[in-house]
Amino acid sequence: MNTKIGVIGGSFNPPHYAHLFMAMETLCQFHLERVLFIPANIPPHKEEEGLVSAVHRLKMVELAIAGEERFQVSDMEIRRGGVSYTVDTLRELKQSYGEIYFIAGSDSALDLPNWKEPESILQLSTFIVFERPSYPFGKVRDDFRREMVLMDSLLLDISSRELRSRIREGKPVRYLLPCSVEKYIEENSLYR
Image (cartoon, rainbow, N blue to C red; front, side, top):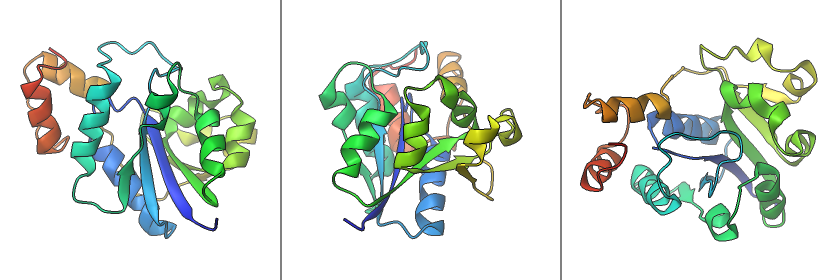
C-alpha cells in the first residue's frame, strides 16, 4: 500500500512529448514506482473539437509510452464509461496505491475550480503542476495554489489542439510527438 505512483490523465488527443516529459520529470523527482497514463472516456471540462474515439486515443498512448517500463496505460476510465471525472478515478486508485501524484499543466490547475469536487482531488493526491507560459501559476486560486506543487522544470509548451490544427493543415508534427503516434495518425486518417 506504500506504492508511490504518478497519474497523468486527459484526452490525449493526441499524446505528445510534453505529456511524456512531465511524466518522466515527476517520476524522477519524486522517486515514483510508475506513472499511469489514463485517457478519459469522455472529457468533462471541454467540448473538444476533433475528439477521436477513446479506442484510438488509448492505442496512441500505448504507442507513445512503449519502451519505458515505468510508464503504464490504464483503460479504467474507458471501461467505466460515461463522463470521466478525476475525483472518481483517484478514489478508485486510492484503494490500491499509497501515495498518488497527479500530474497536470497550469492550464488544468487554473481550471480546477470547474472540476467535480476539486477539494477532494487535492486531498486524494499531491497535485503536481507544470507551468505553461500562457497559463501563469500565479493566477491559480490562492487556496488551491497552496495545496499544489509547482515543478521547477524545463517548459515544453506543446498543445494537442495545436497539433490537431497542424495535422489538418498538412504541417509537420515530427519532433512534437513520437514517430509511432504520428504513423498511427497517418494510417488511420485522424484529425483530417
